[in-house]
Structures are given as C-alpha cells and as structure tokens.
Image (cartoon, rainbow, N blue to C red):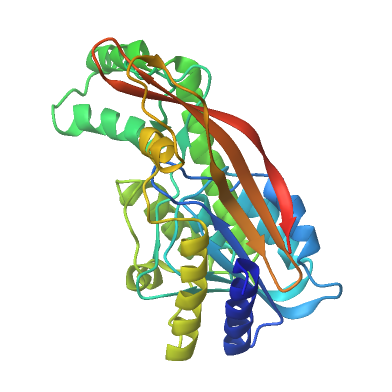
Length: 340
C-alpha cells in the first residue's frame, strides 16, 4: 500500500470510530530542526476538504507547534460555515496557535499523551534583537517583557518613577521600542482572537469564565512551552473529551502514519542529512552540492485528497581551514501539491 492508502485507511477508521461526518487532518512538521508552522496559505487548501452541504459535525485532527496568530480564527470560522459542531482531536500536541484553534472547538478530544500550551505570542519583526552568533532575529516573548518589569519591581524593590525609568531605558537598549509596541499589540490580539473563538462555540462559556481562561493562557502559566495535559486543560475550562479506548487507538494509529511519513522523530542536522543523502566530506574547501530527499512539511488530508507542502533542497558541504565541517542549506523549490 502507498503512504496515502495507509493514511486513508487510518483516517476512515478514526472517522468511523468517532461517527463524524467529515474528518480533516492538519499536521505541520514538528521534526526537531525542521519544523513548519500553521500559515495562511493553508486555509485555501481546506476548500477541497469541506463538505458540499452543511453537516452535523466536522472533526479536525490537529498536530502542530503553532504558527501565525490569525490562522486559527480564519480556519475555525471557515469550518463553521459547513458544520454545526466542530471538534478538535489532539493526538500529541497542539501548541500556541494550535491551542488557540482548540479554543474555538465545541469539544477537544485529547489522547493521554496530548498537550496544549499557553497562547502568549512571541514577536519577531525587523527591529527584533539579533543573535550575536548568527545575526538572525530573536523572538521576544510577550510575557517575558512583563516578567522583566515585574521582577525589578517585586524581587528587587525598584518602585519609584526614577527607578522604573532607568529599568525601561535598559530594556529599550536591547529591545527596540517599536518591537515593544508590537509586543503589546500581540498580547491584545491573542486575547481578542481567543475571546472571539470562545464565543463562536455552539455553547460558549460565560464572559467571566472566558476572561479567567484567557488570563491563565496568556499570563499565569509563566512559560510559553508549558505543556497542558488533558486534566489541566479541563480544569482551565477547555471542553475536554476523554476518548473511548477504540477512538484513542484510532487516533494513535493515524498519528503514527504521519510520524513515519514526515520523519517527525529524527532531528534534522545539515551535515548528517547531506551525508545520509550520499554527500562526500571534502578534504578542503567546498564539495559538490547534494540534493536531499523531498521533505513533507505540512499535510492537510481527508477522504477527498491529500494536500502536501513539500520542500526540495540541496546542501553544500565544506571544510574550514581549522578542519571543521560546515554545511550550507539552500531551498531549491517548495510548495503545495496533491498526493494521490
């Protein structure tokens, strides 16, 4: 059987176990060193997976480390056009924008290993501070800025205006004021989109419960990578559903197909990837470019078809004067295609 046939079989088994009208899988690569994000271009791909007529329930099988902040709102409101009930199924993790997506679900079906996460955004813009080694822009965590101010006030007792002025001056020497403004807008947007998604449910929470949940997800968990298991998620106010054994097994079987197809457990390292693809380490200078196998970055899939975002790349290996090995990664082609 082809990979598509194996996934299709697992998709149908889960859909039948759930009794859902339509099951759509949305999986972005969480492979260490080679992740992909939930991005706006994915929304168009869903047009080929939604039903022709409105149905009772669509299940969204979601695995992701997150992505752009507007994607959850666009995705969930689009799916709402076609189903009375939208449930999100989390096999392993749905972090950041994945968690925001779950806020708009009528039910969140979580495997025992599944986790959600805080939704405080991390801002990267042209004014962000740069990594001293690579020169790449660094993300600025929204709550990191707030925690810095709280630390100097609460832990070090800097409370008067002169103290805080100096503290803020030190902050702006490292983080551009326009980035700090972006940080503030990021917080406001995260709360706004979260509130709108919570209110879009068939049975939305009370206003005070909405604000409590958003406070927990944006302020009180302290660490953007904090894993929220299904019991904690239920305590926070997510409409968590514990799957029956047959559904739990079907969720896991489907996830394992994506894990294998997208090589999610194998960390990506440039030099090792080139050698694995047949590249030779040069004794000095630069070697010959090595084409690496096509990588699947994102899969959006249903019984209708599989939309796959793939990347073709080459790696140029070289050896420094001190004998160290370097590898330059260059994208040759990337984009969406339909897998039969």
